[in-house]
Each structure stands twice: as C-alpha cells, then as structure tokens.
Image (cartoon, rainbow, N blue to C red):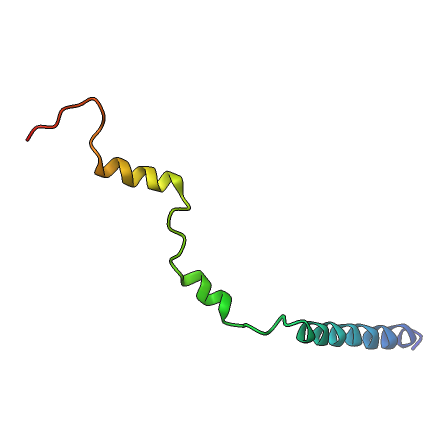
Length: 71
C-alpha cells in the first residue's frame, strides 16, 4: 500500500508531462505538415548531386581518349 504513495504521483506527473509535451508540439507547428515529407521523398530534384554517377553516365556516352573510332 505504501508503493501507491510513490506510484500515483509519479504516474500523474508523467501523464501531465506527456500532455504538456503534446500541447507544446501542437503550438510550435510540429504537426502542421503531416504529408509534406512523404511527398518530398518522391520528388526527383536530386539531379547532379552524385558526381560518381555523372562520371559513369559521361563515360558511357563519350568515346575513350586516345583511341580511334572506326566508321
């Protein structure tokens, strides 16, 4: 029975801390854009960010230097 003296205020304190954190997140706009980051993943605007891939693409389309091409 003595443990209830500790657990009951502790449970109330944790519950109030969680509720306070939730209201703080709501006030600061943490939940304002729920779908935006999901759509940003699908956007294809990362062209030119990978130099290794660009070099591989360039090597595939241009002939090697120093060698003749036969027509």
